[in-house]
Image 1 (spheres, one colour):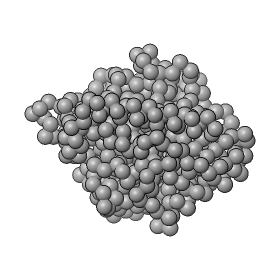
Image 2: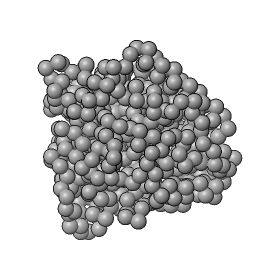
Image 3: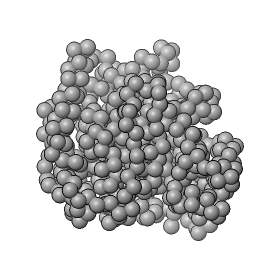
Length: 486
């Protein structure tokens, strides 16, 4: 934890790796064990803490680990299970939390030199919902400063590596959450997504991750990134993500945008039928794509016949955008970075990530009329998407244009760190506010994971989960562990 860079040699794997007997269990398998008395939340937490201490120095995914804090939560859960009074389907389940969300009693550094190690006093609403459900907070995971990069690297915590190839990035900004999950640090992780930050690392680390629609998961206090940024789960299985989403989407009275209609996890994820579902497949999602990778394209295209096999009607059609989504997104990206700069004390601004300072300087040149034009463009993009989804339940296409690239770089070779133009497939759905997910679809010949993106209409999380589970059932790639684990 808190190492300056990932170790560039893999550990020697053995059957005696800490926590190996419990780290791959699903939420249901864990709680079944608690109910039967064959597992204890305390023993599971201890095993996973040992696993983090043994494995995390290889990838640098964990930024805060407090054994006393975690075991106190686990002991409370164990007492409830012994009395037969668990709080929810997640009571005693270990969860990691991205260090952009506040956890009372833990620091919230946001990957920034601006913030110290003093604990905060109040949970973020989604964290409060997990605490109310009896979840056990295992650790906080790495993020770039303010979630500002497509990779996970900060001046505070260094770089996080991809467990499937330690020379590659796990993506960002929820890359710490993803790397931790891929190594078995609990069954689920809390991430956030303002431009792809759940879906990108999920695609790069063989995980399922879903960005809920804006308003599905409560937030407070209001954030400058609203409505683009939302909180959501990453998991190794679709069902685990659904269980966690059910918990974190429970209401928060202070959030003015939270939906009055509760989310309920689908009860047919064991064997979902997609009969009657209309799905569009698009190889480019209607976006300008300067980078193309034949292996990625081939694997993403394999999702279409799997969905058809599950009963869906699948057609090839691209959404048509009234304006390149990158145009307004660039304005929001630059002005969000400017807000970070202006929110820092003048004598502390030099401590900000150079990328934030550089992009924020561009944001200072955005006029009020330019920002309002971007708002208008975003609304026309959302309207075009809504029209497209009048005819389709889901849209399926790529998450990333290329497989995971060097852990030493913020972006692929040939692009500047502040340039999002190479990576166009995720941020449109942050601007429309629609739910979108990444589900594993395959591996390159070099052993690197590839994900396929599933986008739904507003309120369509359940349809996304069903389609993702249909792919997962036909291609259970969650069973493929990183080679470093043996």
